[in-house]
Image 1 (cartoon, rainbow, N blue to C red):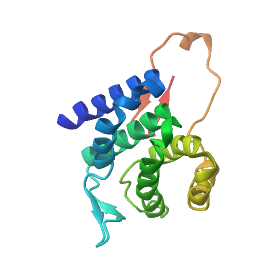
Image 2: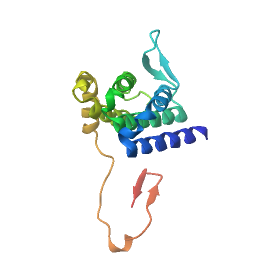
Image 3: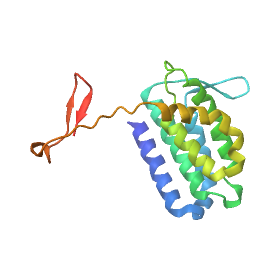
Image 4: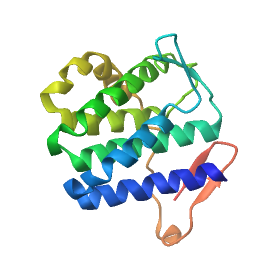
Length: 179
């Protein structure tokens, strides 16, 4: 539907910015406000306009916000240190990322943006902000460490020559895919 079109457009903009790097800075003022607006789509805000960590958990809303935050952080990383262009927006994005990470810390919390997307965007922002990112570390690092401790849901077994070149098979009963 329409959300897929938006997500593809976000990805295209991110790719263009990634290739153009600082040359993209002329387009930045017309692109970034819309991306930032989409990152907060359907999220609840308090009386001061701050993200509360609650909001729409529909698949479409989660995908839209995730695509927007990925694209915004890629665009920001692409323009990099260009006249400090990204720094104010990087701070805005972190003000969105932090409450969402905190809200997702409990295992029963619904994802408003996938944690992997939040952490990847946070890493891109850190690359651009450098030392200015330090105040965010105490709130981001516990989430990274918790993610690093998670067990991978992967197992590797030996195959034999009869399985070489075969397509993968998915077992609905176990939820396992064999390649």
